[in-house]
Length: 110
Image (cartoon, rainbow, N blue to C red):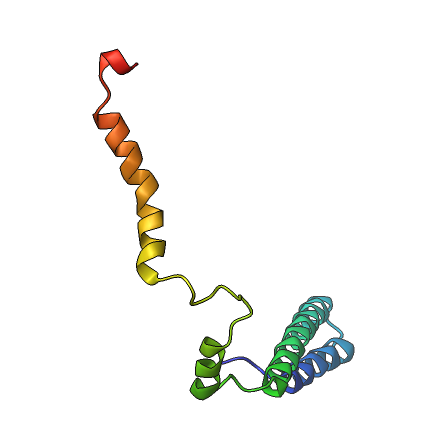
């Protein structure tokens, strides 16, 4: 589970307080590094929270009834005018013609 930016900022403040209160150099060094790490984590958490906020303000996805309306309307004026079979035959015809030529080739036609 992702941590909230509030939690990360609280941990950062706790570690900075430890670094300020201690008289030991190694404890100060570790606490300072921990505070920097918590600060980075807080920045990432804020980014996640902002993204979640943006996503919640986006409009809802179209309903199925709106999608069916889109199927009826097309900006392409030729849509729906050509028969389905004609499109399929045109796509297959060049390949079939090429195979016919390749199979019927004889040395006299080269």
